[in-house]
Image (cartoon, rainbow, N blue to C red; front, top):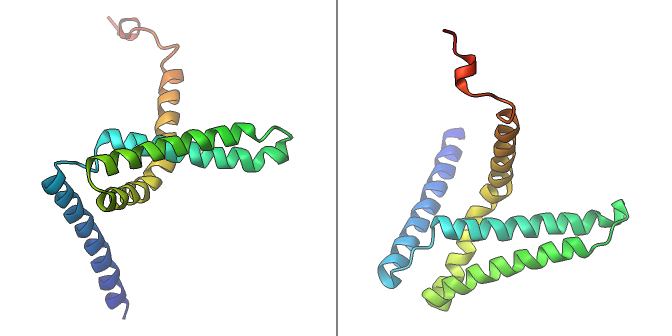
Length: 143
């Protein structure tokens, strides 16, 4: 029974991944438009993070006795980035494919944008501070 459950889950995941690949290939062949590029990932990641952290700031502003306008502004900037992503997808394809592609982008990029981008920034800051006081390698070389 467990093997059957595992086979169903694995088949579902493979089917969804193949469907996404086919949709992407269809858009590339029909419209000459690639849905999954670095630029579109960063646009989606910026929009998703601004929406996420704006909602968090807006929701916790009451607890911290701060104005809620900061969170509302972040959410507005996030909505503007997501709206621009949707606009580009619909402009370069058609409304049905653009809306479907935008939904796929936002759903697929959401986990990576929420967890990956902040971890990347933390790593870059750590490397910046870890190497700030390091001297040239010639100082540490033994002669």
